[in-house]
Image 1 (spheres, rainbow, N blue to C red):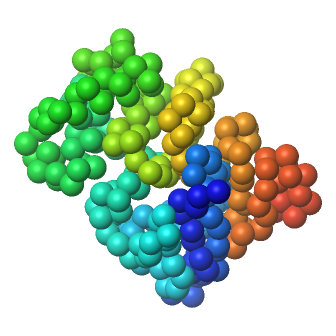
Image 2: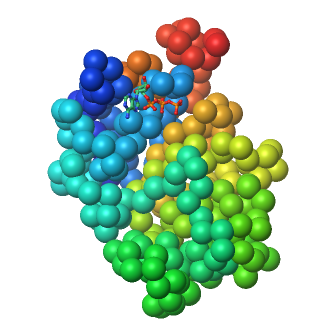
Length: 247
Ligand SMILES: Nc1ncnc2c1ncn2[C@@H]1O[C@H](COP(=O)(O)OP(=O)(O)OP(=O)(O)O)[C@@H](O)[C@H]1O
């Protein structure tokens, strides 16, 4: 099995707070890995250390066997690592298609696109593919700001996959999304995984969403890995029930 991501003994302290305290895990090619845990257990800090937004105090991050610890987010993006944010990053004044083209341009490192708008640069074919894949065809020319919150989340996910990246990290994709859209989002994420072999890691509070989407789940508690396994194994783990599920 090919390992896409390997996190080894990662630590991040903020003064006396050990937000991430010796976390190690791997993500295999084509896998959907879920990371769950109670509020404040270190999920976002872990993501931000992997993505170059925070400098780990200790430990390493490898992508396809190469050390990428402390690389800047833009460099990681060029190497095929993409992410969504807890708070939406879509551009409300731009159309669905323009948002997707812009996401593709940013992957290619053209931050100038932020200033000069979404020029095509050969990306519209790919944008149309994503629009059809994420079933956004009826909204193609709508301004992103006019979409429902759930539709914007779908667009946000489509933007992260725009560059056909090696690895996508999804930060609470289900947050604030209604049940119908949640079903659509899950179905589309499953499909992109099955049909395109996309590898991704999902941080999520919504337990049902994680348990039904992910092939493997890691449970964090107080900055450490408390448990790891299939959704069924994790659900049955007494330590997990005590620390998280029981609340
Ligand atoms: N910039 C920071 N400065 C100081 N402490 C921080 C900082 N960022 C996070 N922390 C602390 O680190 C710990 C882990 O926080 P983190 O946001 O990573 O948890 P989380 O699991 O993502 O929480 P949530 O589910 O609420 O988003 C918390 O105690 C938090 O208060």
